Length: 516
Image (cartoon, rainbow, N blue to C red):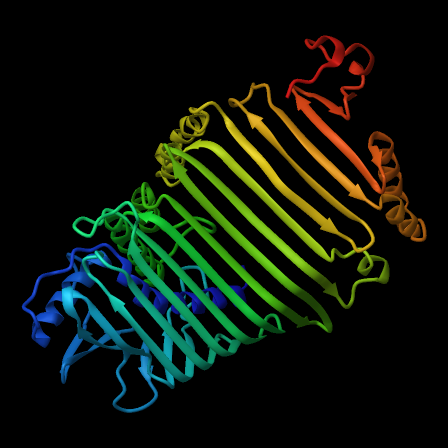
């Protein structure tokens, strides 16, 4: 990976660390008891204990939290490592103002970072050049944050924050990247799962959404580019969350971040030993963390200029999710792109850039416990790599794996292609794998006609003509119903592979029948 890429990742880690400071409200550490209303000293001690539980620092010095009484409210400062305020007297960290509500709840009246400020970035192992320290300059026009936090989780908690006119400038070893956006809007919520009760809220539902408007990124150094986007959005939900496991995940996450940022050495592409150990604890905490998790990210009107060429996207989306029910895991990915453009592409290529592309693969039939076991095996010490084979076999313990393609859609303007299907793998090799798919092309003749004017497309035309001959015509559509079983392939009921089976049927399957 280039130094520029590492610099970008290091800067993003600091953005993520700031987000964790607010997201930690959902961590399931036990909330210490105190008098009502508490003194500043009591609240400070309670918060230090709580943060120590959340961050996994029970045996280490707790964070240097500061709490001061401010009328009926409290002013809390959570230090941010490496942060230096640009204005004398500003706190070197995240400042929150809260006041107590009935039922042990707390109102969040405000939450701000010092602006302007700088953050010293210590690179990860194998990252920036030896001895290199990065510097991120931060400037925020206006900041607002309000919310409610219920430490008992018996009622809902929320946080709403807005940052206006944000500017960051990250430099290290001759590399530089700036980011500007008109505003950043974030909403978080945490509520008892419907199956829980006010007396004993067993699990929680969490949701977060964030949007950046007017994004502008510039990069210089090893690579130079300029990028703008109208909107970048991120949304996520988690249902039936075990709050106790959330705390364990946060603790492992903070330990992992501390290990990475502390420096050290590792073989290329290999994690540090402490990283592997910490990742194993994260995997253990993830088991049973939530019943369902979904994440979706999107951007609109992206334009990237680099090396005299411009690449543009009208809209792009990426999503992923998973659910665990009765011990079985179902997962999916979702990717879509609209209006892809490339200024330097030859006209013959630009004409066939997709106006729309969508793909939605799925995976099901795998046991949640078996996936956790596989992750444990992948992170096992080198002396225990023999665990991997058994872990892979365990994935088939529930009758096999099903790989699905719920949707594949490609729109080339005049022509389009859609497909859906699935593959069943009942056991590891040797196994009788079976699958089926439906592929539909619209206006295939129109596409072939366009390609005939391009001398470089002769081979593609030949493939399309063969495919059309195998297909079934229905108006402006050509349809291929494909079936696969044990090495034999049928298209629209005709065996096409293996060739010797086209007349007599595949070996072991008289008549060429393909079972689905």
